[in-house]
Image (cartoon, rainbow, N blue to C red):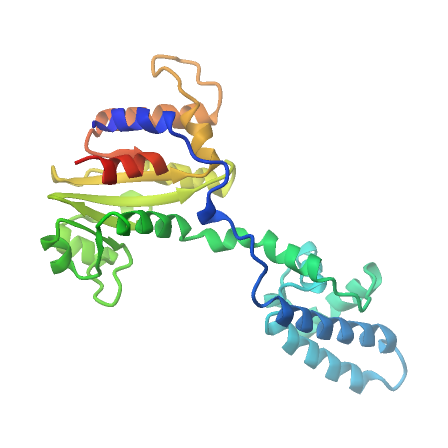
Length: 310
């Protein structure tokens, strides 16, 4: 299939709304430990509320602040106090090592919030759930690796094994051998990813037969802000010239934003692209046409391209 044909296939086989790879529905295994930590932090805050400003309490106050600093430094991110720090344009990391700032924030917290002993497990888990997106950094890469491993591809971090194996792949980071680091890829494949890809390291290098594919994976739910930069990164990857006929770049995007983007179909002849998504779609088509050896894939397209095609 040509790159435009596989792109059309992707348009008709969009992402599932719930992808098990990106779902973190189990309770955090360290929840009991977090609860004990938060109880300790709250005890310190309640004690401070009772003694701050009292005559003769300064020595005890200083000791409690010392203890509080230690507690916050060690896994204190899921406490109400940590959330309050974020609301005050700072973080636990900043205040835990700054005694003056810690004291100022604590006094503000005790003034603006109710310090109680109650620590419901449900809201601690909710705070953990809210930060689940941080776990998704390399999930797309792991998802694609699992698909390849389930279909007779061999994973390696050794370039000699990679080159002599018919179906194989490697993580771009290179492992212990460094064969697939940025410098290793330049040395072993003659391709320099760096300035032309905004210094971005890719995720997977895949070999099928004599063809070698350099892939960047993104998972996006919505557009905007930093997400727009990520979209531009993988769109620009389509326009990267590898310099060899059997070398290709692949821009992989899953998540619900992939569906929105694939559904934005517009004519390149149109002079009125209504919004950012349509402009992104138009750039993808333009780069695919001018770079027939490079590809845009979603999950179904990845399986079609690497598993179902001979």
